[in-house]
Length: 340
Image (cartoon, rainbow, N blue to C red):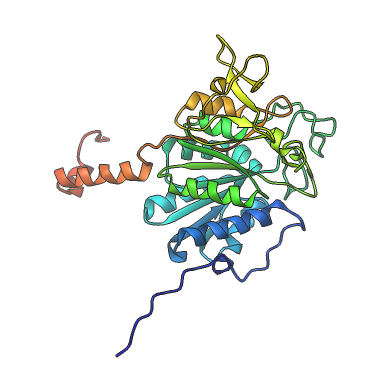
């Protein structure tokens, strides 16, 4: 008698391909790759049901390094390819990998529609505020004044904020994390995976060659406690080493302000409590920028609605149940003309 032994659970290295990982030494993409592989192992993902789709850019080398299915597609069009994969086989677990240039410039239109349609994908946008692969030109997220080969006197464009864009496009799940914050990033990725619909995650990713330390104002260890606010549903929006600072709405104004508990009559009851289902609050949090405000990290918005492929397949089944397929009748139905 032959006994069938249960398969051993997969570990992070089981999701690493046999390809040499080629990013610049010190690139934040290494940390994100490690986090994604750990996330899949923790979730018990099946490699033959997992697909990574990318466009063009440093981040878009990702599918080569995953021992899953994958597509390295064309500039900005990864959302269209990923949508096709998901609609063809909704059982697949589809991850979309893109960067701030690929996803918000060349692919901004495609990103908008995959979010508003609410296709059930995990969308990871690596934001380094620069075009890395093409040697450091300004991207849509580059700040005003950024000097690059394409903006030698400093960019005069206002910077696009990815989470703000996603919320405006109708995304039902929007979150932020940091490349080197491994524990936090893994938890955010798990939350994104659990969401049934388009889950948008902005990851602050350091480009050591063309935009090094651009996020140090809130990621450096010595300033992080006072420059980051880790938002959690149902918990007060507090930050700082002693959690004495917080956010509240200005009296009689729909505007956030930073206050200190214990000063000027401010009590713990004055601090705003995070509600991840509140779209307006998520938008306000997504707009906060250091040094005047802390950078909001975590799940800003999570308010599920039926996913696109779920509604599409329900519509198809409904039609199948009430009509008889007749190709000739379809060809000769309404809206036809005879040309003499």
